[in-house]
Length: 430
Image (cartoon, rainbow, N blue to C red):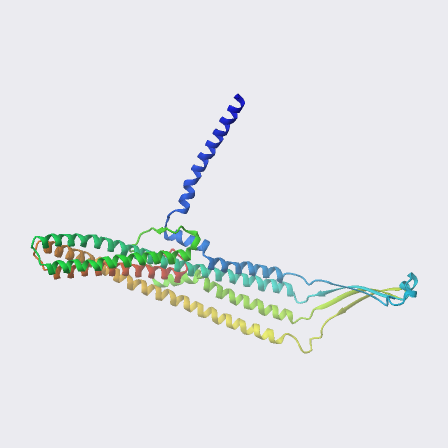
């Protein structure tokens, strides 16, 4: 009985320890499945790790590396064997003497000797293509980063607009309640009260539209991050505010020429085209096939060594050499076009950022305070009967329009900033 009791206590203790371990693990697991708040940098990292289109694009690097393996392979030797004049239909000849003296057997081995360092040129051409592929994938990452940042700003704009709509609705609801009290007290007419109450519909509609915009923006962003990489109820966090940028367009253009992966890919395209040209020139050289053959004929054993080479009378790979030469010119022109496009992208993005910066500066120079003060004065005066209802509603509409316009201008500025980062090819512009 004592042994059974001791075993029972041990089982209870083990169960208790396991339970504690489970409860220690569960909060972390629940947190991983629950709502999370991610910053812009975290969103970009999630997209780079989980975006399925990007992951599919990265496989092209492995495919190109596999092509390197193929390009570096040597030709396989050929083994051949024959045994002729076997007496299948002559039973009388099926003896060892006939098989030794009356049949013919051949066994040989041949191998293709590549000339002109074809294998080395094939491998170099494949490596150059792999290098270009890496840069193209890096350019896909640059484009994805911009898309994530743009959608992140859209979410911030939607949440800021939603916050404004909630504040306006709560503030105007107090005005409606006050208007109802004044109407019941006979301080205002029923028509004025109904106008105030009808204006509440606009605030309620704005709130519903802001909620929809937020849900859709979060959904679009989640698709880029990798649908399964974040919890359904996730949210974003980070400052939605003005971020001044210092620098001139020439510095940004110089940095772009040093960092843009699409320009690097275009430059590597020229190198790859030249490698293809050298490969085609190497293919022009004819390969030699050598073979060694052992023969047994009528009881005599012989060995034969031979070699063969095509005579380059007609086909000297002229067409492919010419095509590869023109491909070099094509790649060089594409590099020049990409170089010019890089400079153009930076200038366009820089000018767009400057223009949006001026707009934001106008709002921040005092117009926001003016709209806020005008609304507050009109509300105070109306509540005390010193201003008409129309004046108050007009001030309310002006305040709301100014606030929404400022948020949209701020989002445009932040999007212009992200466009400049994409054009330069780096996140840090300083």
